[in-house]
Length: 178
Image 1 (cartoon, helix red, strand yellow):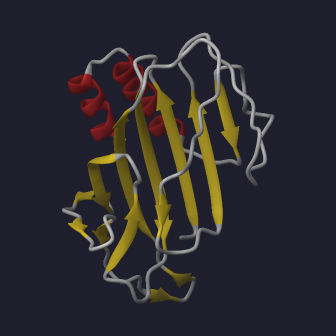
Image 2 (cartoon, rainbow, N blue to C red; image 1 turned 90 degrees about the horizontal axis):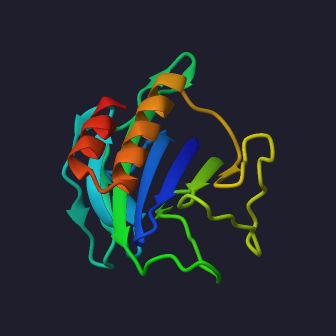
């Protein structure tokens, strides 16, 4: 995986939604193994087309991949988009919450993780190896690393807002736009 961009939004009710946008260079895998822990898959696309992941024996799932093509510029990349959701305990005014990324059965070269907390909440990183991108982080949004298309980001922001307001039909519509 050449580039992995995660945007994670947390709702006060405990619901969580993660969008993983991946640039994958594939020369051998039939499926990309995805370990989603307590998340369930809401949507999967490869190069803009909906795909049906398979369940793997270890409890993870596999996203079907085509092989990348070798060109004069190098290997072509596949655009893999995943949206996952989870229901957790509601947020408390004080305390700690552990967050972990969805992981893949392939190495990730570049990673960007943006976390959007419920309104009025702030967080600090207390462990792990991520470095905070202080240029993009604000009180309710924590960003780890860089890059994104403005139009896609704007549509995604609308989807996150709809999701936090429990308007799942509108959230799905905005996700389909990205």
